[in-house]
Image (cartoon, rainbow, N blue to C red; front, side, top):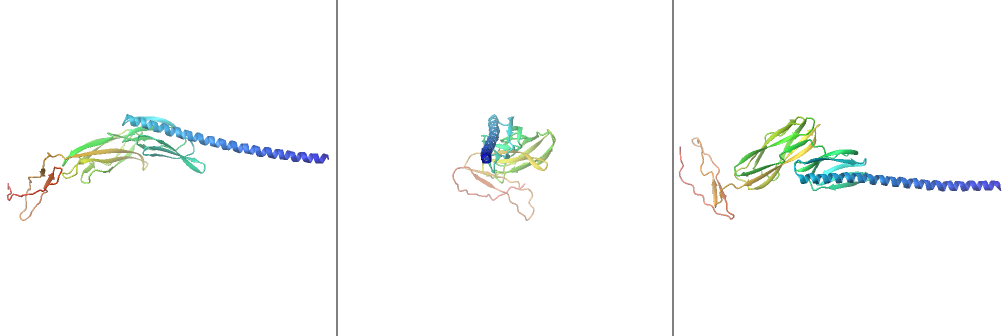
Length: 300
């Protein structure tokens, strides 16, 4: 009888311990899940706060105009997969479990640059240059932010812009040009397409625009892109806008002729030469034009 009671007590004890262990494991698992959820929520909150602060500061600099600059302290969690600046959006992608989620902040300002995905606290530079709010380390600045040309037919002009190296080390810059909407017959040239800049140094570049005699009037835009090269890769990039306005610079009237008189120069015996002759219709309607050539030449 005594042995039976002892055996029963042992069984009961084992059952109680088993139940206790199951309850304990459930509590531990629940607590771990809750802690993981809380940690994930905290990381999400830190990313959202950082993205929001950057977007708001970009808006503020954009409202102040070219050259405005400031710094923002942000904190990125350890589960950052990537950071992207696209048009008007700041995107921080977080690894969550087997997938990911994007934390997005939007700004009224055009955005460019790069945010380091490294975790922890960091100070991020912001500057409104070259038509966008540059987020991240700014290596290059330009002045002015855009070039403006107002030319008539058969006219040309030049303008100078400066490139400044803001880094505390030497950099190499490369300049490329996209003609955009500028007519193909319009000549746009620059005196140099690259330069080595010392720490804190600068370089001046001259852009020349030449409009031919025959071209459609209007407003056109091209873009010079100044890339800063560090360790054989582009570390910074700034766009310089070139705005061109072509106006019809003749006196209004029914018809205008160009090259009424030619200096033909010396003509070798038995040969012939030609010169262009343009007639421009200045009216808003079509006209029939009759050309009569006089049967005389003036010899000098």
